[in-house]
Length: 165
Length: 432
Image 1: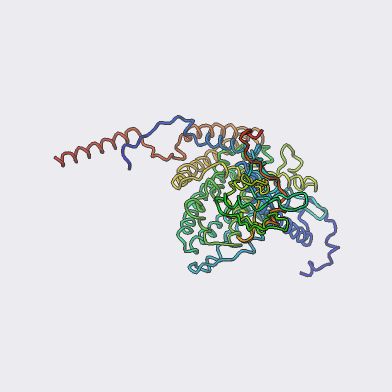
Image 2 (image 1 turned 90 degrees about the vertical axis):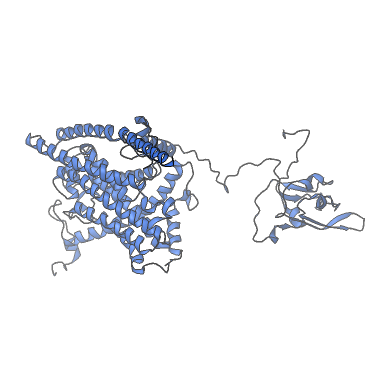
């Protein structure tokens, strides 16, 4: 037997089991008839995402359907995760274009530097987050796939309009 | 036998008196139909009560609950059933095979069997004779339910023992202690019902409540409270779910079970819940008696009234199933010592004392020549109100469910402090 146990004389309202039970039943019943369902039913409902959301990349194209990229090499240089692979090529007119342009979405940390650094506004991050593949290799998006993406692109932070208004 | 082999159409002829028992063949067909319909409905209700439980818990907790299978999740029980059939039946090497396999069946059957004697509707005055809305109209139906429902503990105990697993064994142990303790309080709390009805046939108990124009919950409130608490303990539902206390015993007695064997324990739990709800409805809430109506109380009645009475019974059962769930998602689990002290120190003495009260009150009122009716019930109601008020004001002060700290009287505290002081004195002297 523990000695010097502090024995508190509690008022009836605090020790009554029946009162506590009835209060509890009332509370649960209130929740039952008026449930605050706060769960987002994900595949059917989606939370709206910010216009500055940095998700899956997109490569924008010119009017004739070619990638805007001029293979300047800035994005693989600036990429902190080293996830962009770029092999430049040159056509007969001397225009540079990417022979290989691959982004490993699995390595990417979605910092948005590539979009910020791109002089042609070719590579963009997008407002899109649902990526799933059966293999790691599946996450390496090549140029075709980057050009085929249709989701809206990310709006970069504008120092002149910091709140995005 | 040759009499039974007569051609069917002749025997299906209209009987002389619809208040009399029908001939063999109509009786046989009616029983078979009742059996099929009610067993099917019972199983469906049991399956859907799992969904109801998940939905109600979800709503109480501000969630949506299962809503993927079918419209709003209504086919969830089917998916669960399919899943349970497809899953692997594990048979751990260390189990006692015979008991391990026997236990789920033993847990499952009593819940089903009890259901057979519960009357679920007024008798139907059919063209072929009186058809009782009960599967087996046992004259000792009440005793039968008590006897069979106590068999349910064997399934749980054998599951715990046969699993050869310490958590399962603890679960089985707790369950046996709990169910044996509360069985007594339960039986004792039902004696006042018998005293009032003067019979052990469930149908008579329902009729008696109808004749009194007052359900037993009003005339025998104390018995109702003790029975309700014992029924919760008997079905191992929260706040008495110690046998499967997840936070302490993994899953208690069904830790080692998988697939359909596990599912049988779950079905047994919900089946027990439905059966106990039916018992509460029959014994204390007038069974199939339609409130504010006397037309249904006189022998066999028309088909429409029978249907209405069955619906009333179903509504009552559903309410108590809901009540079980409501309680479950409101109250936390009792501690083991609280459980035992509640059962032995409070429910049993109260139930015993109440038998004396009801017996003497019945005897006294009968001696005074008061007819069983509204006045009779009213006097009972008044007495109950007084007792209930006294009980709650006397016992509901942190005594029934003892708090986490030990409750000591002032003298005891003073004595213990003196002992400590004396010990401290002794040790300082020894140190010098």
